[in-house]
Image (cartoon, rainbow, N blue to C red; front, side):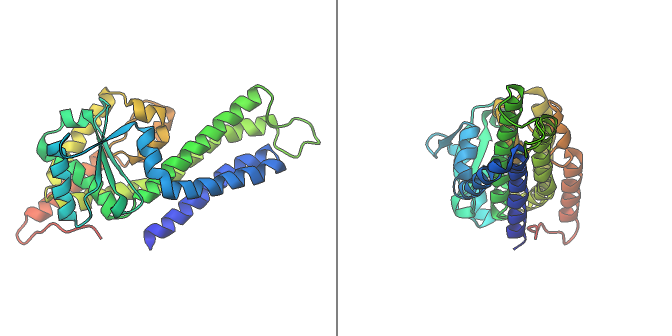
Length: 298
């Protein structure tokens, strides 16, 4: 129920940003952008996983092409008590991973070639378990819709800016019921930031929950803690072409692929890595104490 409420609120907020751009352009644009928002909501629900995979140029693999990775995903999915998700690989030197799919039956786990080179097997298990936790907790739909809708907001805002530059949008006359050129410029600049802040509002708690649930699935909180430490350093060293091309999808990854590389990284949808590691270490300490036992996050 909680995730359903989040999804509805997210769709409403992002749709409102999109319609606000149309309203600023003029009365005639409100209906157009309202229709676009409705269409995007429906498309996001049914096709967000396909869009996200395409935006990141992810390629499907099976047991014959990636036997070790596939068996790992299958084994951890069994431990998480969810159907085995499809497995994808992204050709990217930046070490990272993400999950998508609107429910466990349509789950997908994707990893980059960079993460396969960087992490040892134990650390990779921790990362895969984290992604399976997102699927188990049924919060994949929220982040996928957020990424897709935020991408549209950013694209529309970009079109609005170029339209103003070439005089195709907005109005400067007093008779024009739309926003002035200056107001449109402000809205076109603010809209992408607003979309990112909406993503930020739900993503940080999701990551903490997935860390705890993933650590319980793998039975090894310190493996994920070690992986997160390496991933943060790796993503500062290597640029993620996929994430830079579609920055709205950055919130899907386990580690921020845009860390320190743009103004939008100031509004990080990821909690601080140090805090995530600290919580995992505390979890490991509790499980190592007499009578301690790892439990799935509720």
